[in-house]
Image (cartoon, rainbow, N blue to C red):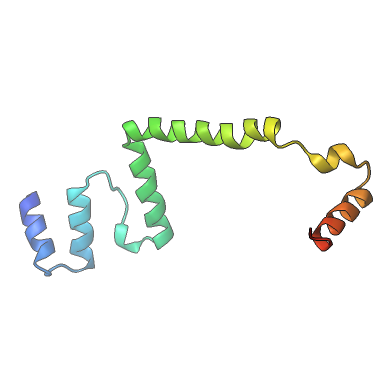
Length: 108
């Protein structure tokens, strides 16, 4: 069995081929159970983020805080501070479209 230091030295000595690169990656990161070199770029990106989110500890709590803040900004604030002006002031779609067209054409 090859040690990690031997794998790194082989990898950085530029003596590796695609097969030995794949072996080195799988040897160093034992959680990779697939052929890394034959995957498309989309699969690599997907597995990169999937494995990163699985191994996160503090990051999960930070993402939860981010999603809660986004929910507050876009859902709750929209309900209270951005009323539907056209829906409340006009009864038909034609009246709404005429008002919007008038506002776009007649700049003040």
